Image (cartoon, rainbow, N blue to C red; front, side, top):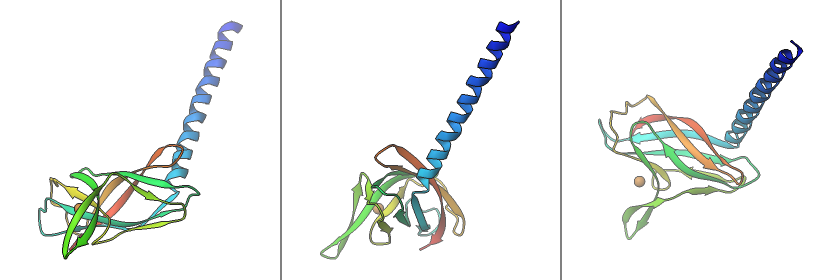
Length: 155
Ligand SMILES: [Cu+2]
């Protein structure tokens, strides 16, 4: 009888440990996503049923270390990280594998510069709606994500 009680107690104890552990993990993930502040996220859309569009925002690194933007993920098309460059009056887009944001720095995604390129868009992005975009980041310890609501605007 005592033996089975002990078993039950140790089972509950392990259960509590597992719960505490997962709460601590999600708290840490939350804290990390708070290290990046994002302001004015929007997607510029040209016309109806556009197959491509560009997303802009201001990223601010509030942490004490470099944070790298690895990827943006949408549920309506593929994405790439791009920057624009003008040479001899010709604007071309350059693919970037990642974008570093140094500690305390602000990085501006603006028309004519850095942007999230959306391609292969499979639905009409209604102007004045919002679209959730998942941003994947990395710091020196781990990768973490942040979901940001982008306002859809007509260009
Ligand atoms: Cu582009």
